[in-house]
Image (tube, rainbow, N blue to C red):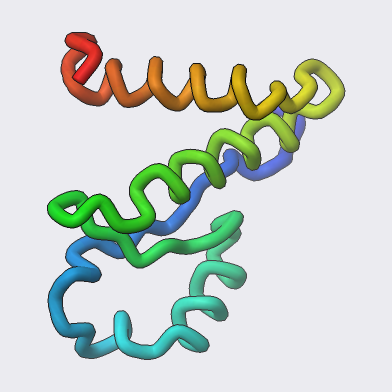
Length: 97
């Protein structure tokens, strides 16, 4: 960001509904990679089975709010879920699905 802080980002490994192989099978390695590269966290996810999709989005939104704590305050759970629903609507082409 303009003040030198890193941009909040989350590492998302997709297709966790399939057998893990290679680097994806080693959670310690993924922890180290995410930490070394400045990710605020990582998630194994599956869009097909809806695994960790919402959790990854929530984590990123919280990281964004925390990085801007001098401007924003973290909304209540009700408002937070409203934000997630709005974001999901945007991801679906703005149709609210």
